[in-house]
Amino acid sequence: DVKVTQSSRYLVKRTGEKVFLECVQDMDHENMFWYRQDPGLGLRLIYFSYDVKMKEKGDIPEGYSVSREKKERFSLILESASTNQTSMYLCASRRLAGAREQYFGPGTRLTVT
Amino acid sequence: AQKVTQAQTEISVVEKEDVTLDCVYETRDTTYYLFWYKQPPSGELVFLIRRNSFDEQNEISGRYSWNFQKSTSSFNFTITASQVVDSAVYFCALSEAYGGSQGNLIFGKGTKLSVKP
View 1 (cartoon, each protein chain N blue to C red):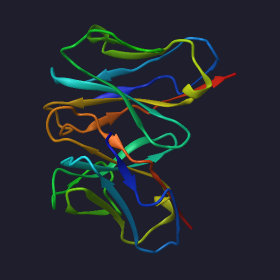
View 2: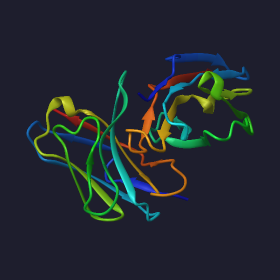
View 3: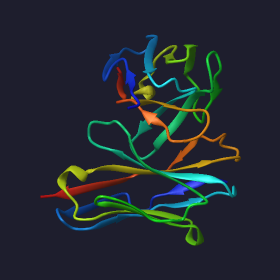
View 4: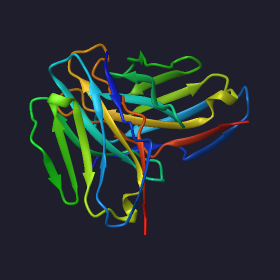
């Protein structure tokens, strides 16, 4: 079974703090993704990575950065958290070739106060 | 432009009723993939099914069935004899082989299904 894990299920941070959200997958997938999910807006892609040290902006990258130093780990960084970044954050991974479905982690519900 | 529309925002049914979740997609690619995901209250998106654009065969898996019709650009999902455990938000998604979305998933806004005992 594919397993994608995220470092925290719930996180509360203060405005201006630097926040790290970690994602690890155990299936040797090349591609990894970060989404945020908000009521009425659905899932929106923040960043994705095709391979180690590679990253691409998604639809809403502003205010975020990412890091992929190892194939299994993809980190989302909020350099200076703001209240409008309060959201559910979902990580996913996928093989580069063949089946295109993404496998998701359990999500991190981040609250910025 | 690529797009996925789930017109039903919320559906409420009583246990044992059948329910169909609608999904309409737009794409210019001739090669594409369609997906359904389930998001229970716990939050994790669970992959249910993938179909590619060359395979219009309907699929049945237990109480779940999927109807893919290219002529109407639809990929509908039916739950037969619904159960309380089916309560979740269901997302339809599209992935293009060659389009501008770089093969990433394009999600609909989701349909929240509530199954009452």
